Every structure is written in C-alpha cells, then in structure tokens.
Image (tube, one colour):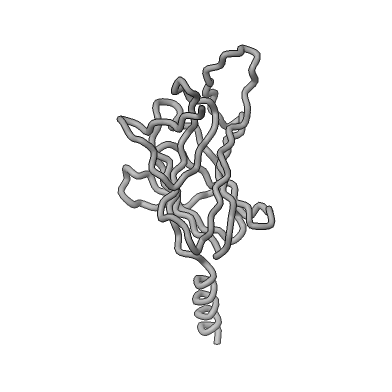
Length: 170
C-alpha cells in the first residue's frame, strides 16, 4: 500500500510540473561576472512563489553538464545556467541585485552624488505551456556601452564577442 501511494505521488506530482527549461547568464567582463543576480518568480495573482513548488539546479557551462543543487537562494553569476522547473501556469520572472550584494562594483556615474541602487531587470512573462527552451539574462549598459546597473531578460541570444555584449538602453 505504501509503495502504491509513493508511486501515485511521484506520477501525479511530476504531471503537474512543466518540462524544465534553462535560464543562462553568459560571461561578462571582469568583476561583473562575480556580481550575482537573484531570481524572483510571481504567479498570475502577484504572489511571490520563488521557492514554492519550484525546482532548480545550476551548472557552470564550462564544466559540461555537472548539475548542482541550490543551497539557499536562486541566483546566477556570469557563466552559469539555471535549470528551472515550475508547476504548469503563467508567471512573471524578474532578476535583481540588492546594493549589499553588488560586491563593491562601482558603476560609472555622471553625478558624483548619485547613490547606489538595486539593480532590477525587466519583467519577463512566462507561460509554461508555450515557453522558449532557453532564456538569457544579461546586464544593461548606457548609450556609451558602460554598465549601468540593471538586468535584461529575453529569449533572444545576446551578441557575443570575446564576452557577452551588454544590452544598451537608449
């Protein structure tokens, strides 16, 4: 009876999950690779469900598919890929980096009095029934190409040179 119950739970819990997909943050230049961006997932009602019924593991792309489990929070550093499983449904994904987690990374500023701010991405709306296989997260930059403290989520691969070229906001 116990085995039957466990089999029932495994079959029906996996049926409620959509097939996992990848969120990839390519390598950036220098110290920016070490600045983590943290994932936030909201359901269609606006509730934070980042750690409710989600499954996530990560890999360093250079290590060729060695998956690790997250111990505390879901984040990405430069060169990491997240394998994310969500229950079927519609979600809003955002990435952010609080000021205290920016590792002292100083952004170029025109105004010396400008304060550090939390780096926040655009909102990415995801339907697990009709989703891309890979979603990319890249830092944003100003019109001169300097990082300006933000993230961009898209299902389009960024331009690559030696490193990922940042998304330029005009």
